[in-house]
Length: 239
Ligand code: SF4
Ligand code: SF4
Ligand code: FES
Image 1 (tube, rainbow, N blue to C red):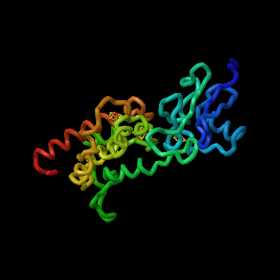
Image 2: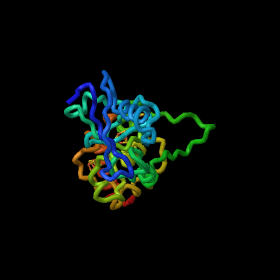
Image 3: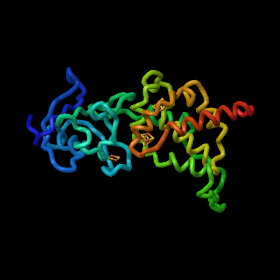
Image 4: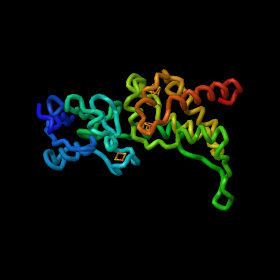
C-alpha cells in the first residue's frame, strides 16, 4: 500500500454503495477537514460538506470519522487513520441533506424544547447582576457553558438512536447551565421541560457523550444534576 497517499472512503448521497473511494496526498499536520476540502477542490467539486471557522469554534464541521463522531477541523489524520485509511460519513441520528451535510433542525429544536434560552427580568436601565465567580452555581454553569453546538455528543448517543424524541446530551447540558444561572427566572419551567419521559431521566449515564465531546464538557454530569434537581423539585411539589 502506498503510504504517501491516504485511502479515503467518503459517504456520497445517491450512490449505490454509499461510499466512494479517493486517494489523497498525505502531509504533516493534516486534518480530516483538510482531506475533505482537498477532495472537494481537486477531485469531486459537487461533494457537499460544512465548515466555517476551521479553528474549533463554530461547531459546524462534525462528521463520523472511522465510525466515531469528531470535529474534523481539529482532528489530525495521524491520530485517526487506520492503516492509512479513513472512512468519512455524516453525523448519525440526524437526517442527511446531501453527502456529509446533516439537517441540524431537530438538534436545535430540542434546545428550544428544553428551554435552552436565557430568560432574565432586568432591563437595560438596571445595573449588571453580580454573580460571584466562586459560587457553587456559577461553577456548575461554567463547567458546561463552552458548548459549540457541534452535535458530536448527540450523534454518539444511543438513547437518541433508540428514542428519537429524547432531548439528548447537548440540549440537556444547555438546560443545566441555565438552571444554575442565578440571573435566569425560568428555572421551574425549564425543570418541567426536561423532567418528562423524553428528558433527563431517559439518560443511562454511560457517558459516550462525555467521552467524545471535543470541548471536554460533561453532559453526563449535567444530566445527573438535572435528575437530582427535578426529583427534589417534584418532592417539594414544584413540578
Ligand atoms: S450518558 Fe446519557 S446523554 Fe450521554 S450518550 Fe449516554 S444516554 Fe446519551
Ligand atoms: S456538549 Fe460537546 S459534543 Fe455536545 S454539542 Fe456541545 S461541544 Fe459538541
Ligand atoms: S470548522 Fe468550526 S469547529 Fe470545525
